[in-house]
Each structure stands twice: as C-alpha cells, then as structure tokens.
Amino acid sequence: MTSIPTLETDRLTLRAPQAEDFPLYRDFYADAEGSGNYGGPLRPDEAFRRLAADIGHWHLRGFGKWIIVFRQTGTAVGGCGLWHPMGWPRHELTWWLLRAFRGQGIATEASRAVILFAHRTLGWDRVETHMRDTNQPARRLAERLGGTVTDRVTFPDGVTRDVFLLPEGAA
Amino acid sequence: MTLVAAIPTLETERLILRAPQPKDVPPFAAFYASDAAGFVGGPLDAAQTWRYLAEVIGHWTMRGYGRWIVTLKDEDEAIGLVGLHYPLDWPEPEVGWFMWSGNGKGYASEAGRAARDHAYRTLGWSTLVSMIAPANGASIRVAEAMGARREDDYTHPRFGTLTVYRHPAPEALA
Image 1 (tube, rainbow over the protein chains, first blue to last red):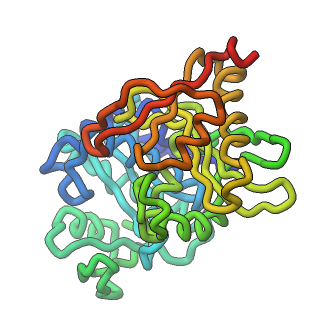
Image 2: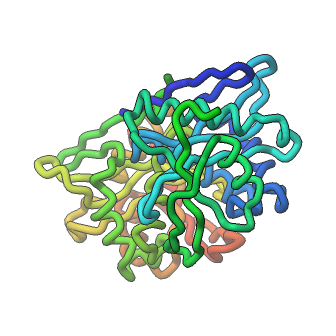
C-alpha cells in the first residue's frame, strides 16, 4: 500500500490529494483560460475523475502530484508533483495554480521541494519537465529553476516539445 | 504520510477481491482494447486504460469505497473488475461488474454478492442499484441472478438510456 509523504517549504505544505480537494479541482478546471494548458476546461464530473486519477497515479507509480496548501491559512491553491502515466515516454515535473495565486513564486517554491524529494527520497538521478512551445509560463518556470533544454522530442500526441533537465538544488 | 487508499480484501468461495495493482494493467488493457468493453466505456487504448485504473483506485480515496480486481483464489491474475461505483455524474451509488475471463461460471454474481454484502454489512447501506447498458444481456442476467428487479430507466446526459436494476434490501437477504 503506497503512502504519500508531506513536504514543507517556507510558505507551503505539499500534502496528499484527498476527497476534500474536489472543489479546488472543479474550480480550476472550470476556468477555461487557467486550465487551457492542462487539458481544460473540464466538466465537474471530469474534474472528479481527474482528481481520482491523480490519487491513483501514486498507487500505480509510487510517486505523483501533491496539493499545494498555504501553511499559515491552510488554503489549497493548486498542485505540483511528478507525473508519468503509462504510454507517455518520459516523466515530468508538473504544477498548476488557481489563477489568483500565480505570480507569487508558489510554483517555483513547490517545484524545488519536489525536485529535492525526487533526488533524495526517490533516488532519481534526473528530474525533467517538458512543455508546448506556446506554454510560456511553464518555460519561464523551468528556466527559473535552472533548467536547460537537453532534448527536443515528438510525443505520442504528435506535439514536439523541449525537454528541460532541472538541476538538484536549483537556484 | 497519507495512505493512498485503504482497500480491504474480500474472499468468496472461489474468488478474491483485492486492490488494483500495477500488474493488473496488461489484462485490464487487453479487455478494454476489445469490443467486449463497448458496454463499459470502451474500447480504450493502453494509456487510457492505465488512467482509468488510476481513477478506479482514486475513487476509493474519494468515496471510501470502490471497485476491486477479481482473481481466482489459486491464481493472482486479474479476471474482472467488480464493486461499488459512484462517480459524480451517477444518480446514486451502484454495484457493477465486468469479467473478461471465466465467463459463464457465475463469477460475476459471486463477486457482485460479495460487493453488495460489503455495502450492506460493512458500510451500512440500505439500498443498491446496478445500471446496465440495455443491450448488455449478460450483465442483465447477472443482476437477475442476484435477485435485482428492473426499475424505470435512467437517462444519462452522455451515455443515454441505462437499464436500472434495484437489488433486494438488506433485510430481504438476511
């Protein structure tokens, strides 16, 4: 039985996704603009299944996505983690935030904790991410994390993406 | 640390109902690649099936109950998916089953009864339906073998008409 650890940063707690996170998923995926880079918008029943799949990913892989919560207020604002569904050739560090909470360095702070976890706890020697050329916010974040483009790959969906290697102890 | 999902193991005369595992993906995907999966949302490719199995596992965390992988007692190979299912777009929780191996031996109703007993005895539920595609005669026969009675159809916004079978109440089975 897989357990999901809790990670702490200065401002954030990264904890296991739970049933109570459904409103967060529903609201995020109802926002067509905010969820456009994440397969959204989704209906509420699809958001429910997305949350269930994010939880099940932990069980099938032993790693997955956390919920990002402000330590002081307990407010859940998004997610961050490591994602590698079957049929997809590479893992990725991934993050998503309600639009109201973007631009505060939250994704960067959460990502650093996840990169560290991947190296130190999972024993990975490589953490990477990839994104569509049009996804500028994701590209900027990868660069802010000290990422460098190591590959350019055409994925099973036919989209060619840059692959960033994200260093441990990113600046 | 938070457990992904607490999934109990059930045992019947011939079967084990247990938590889905990564090794169940190949047989599950083989079923979902076939036309036989047409009544239960298929066909799906391997990647879609993997995601679907992840949803099945996450459902346990979301609802506190869910569906089990069914195996024979002496062989830990997945032959079906049976259990309690309540996605957001369902009118009420249902007990559902599909078997991709060993059909015609009564495994679906044997596993379905174990899931129904779990709902009534462990979860304390007082009623239970099964919602079945109208053309899925094999599944309808399982519902009837379990003593369920047909009610008015339910029209799902996307899946269309589903035949509703209501199971005997707990006291009727006691």
